[in-house]
Image (cartoon, rainbow over all chains, first blue to last red; front, top):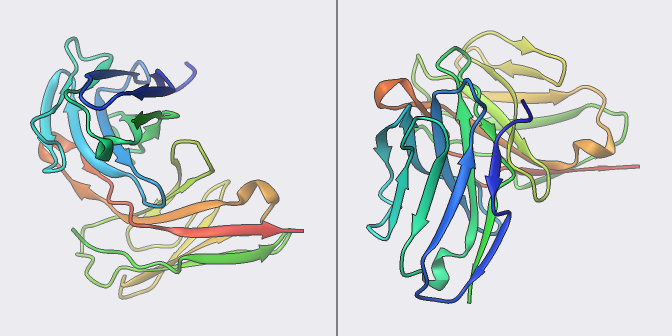
Amino acid sequence: DTGVSQDPRHKITKRGQNVTFRCDPISEHNRLYWYRQTLGQGPEFLTYFQNEAQLEKSRLLSDRFSAERPKGSFSTLEIQRTEQGDSAMYLCASSSRDYPYEQYFGPGTRLTVT
Amino acid sequence: DAKTTQPPSMDCAEGRAANLPCNHSTISGNEYVYWYRQIHSQGPQYIIHGLKNNETNEMASLIITEDRKSSTLILPHATLRDTAVYYCIVRESLTGGGNKLTFGTGTQLKVEL
């Protein structure tokens, strides 16, 4: 297994457009996380899945954001009606349910909204 | 969330030990301290974690004070490839057993020749 993968790596979109990102976790990991990172800041937690169930959402996740993990494997993060403030790196991480619960991060999708 | 405080930047000569401090004075008794690092344009990478005792692995050592209000990450022989932002995090448990990492702004470590 080559780790967590994310697609695309870069996305440029115009304000108002919808975008969707994909995350493929490490295959045996049942926990999946999305984070957002803006320039000069550390990543911020957005949401968490255990298998296909979305168990936690940050207040940062406005109603324009939706995340799914339909079969408990890959996950998608969709942003509707993008705004310039959505420009950021979107990071996905996965972990097993076993201690020490280490989260393995993907390389991220860099979104630029023009 | 238990907050952490780290210096914004540190320099270290290659081959020397890098000691990165972190304050987490509001940590509670069952909360773990995790360290991650992020090399430019990559996702964060797990380094080490601990609860009370000092810990060591192939990457680093973690020294936690007896009162648990602060810790120090030690890279024993820093190399240029250790140049990165280092994050000290107090792990927060989520519903269903997940874990939220609250990163802060970290310490930019620059390793120089």
